[in-house]
Length: 157
Image (cartoon, rainbow, N blue to C red; front, side, top):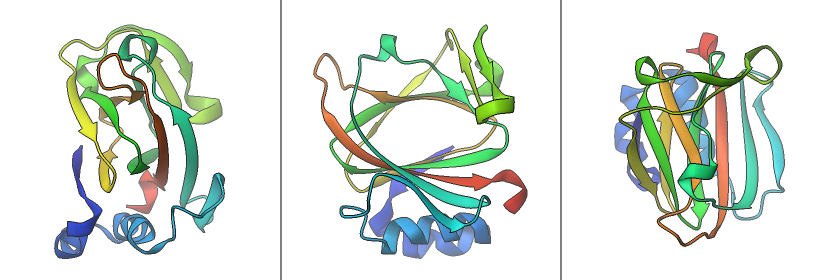
C-alpha cells in the first residue's frame, strides 16, 4: 500500500509498472469532476474506473475488505474520508466471502489498523496483501465524497 498526491505523480511515474502508470495517468488527465457516475473502461476488464458519490459513515459501520484479482487506486475528487489500512496477515475472522462474484472479501475486525486520511487530490493504492476499510468519516462528522476507484487486474502488472 502506498499513497500520495496526484499533483506529484509525474516525478514518481517511472517507479511504477506500466498498468499502474495507466491508471494514475487516467486520474491525472481525465475531467473527473464532470465524468458520469459509474464504470468507465480504460483497458476493457484489465483496467477500469468506477466513479461514485456517497456520504461517509462512522468507521465502526464500515467493514474491512480485501481483493484478490484487482489492485485498487482510490482517489478523492472532493470531500474527505478516512480509510483504515492493515496488512492482510492481520485480518481476523471473515465476515463475508464474495471473491468469486465480486472480488471482495469482508472481515469482521482487523487488529492494528492504521487510519489514513484522504483529502481532495490524494490517492491510495491497495494490493491484494492489504486490507482496507474505505468510506469512513473523520471522527463523528460525516461528509459527502466524490471518489474514483481505478481497478487494475493483478495479471496486468
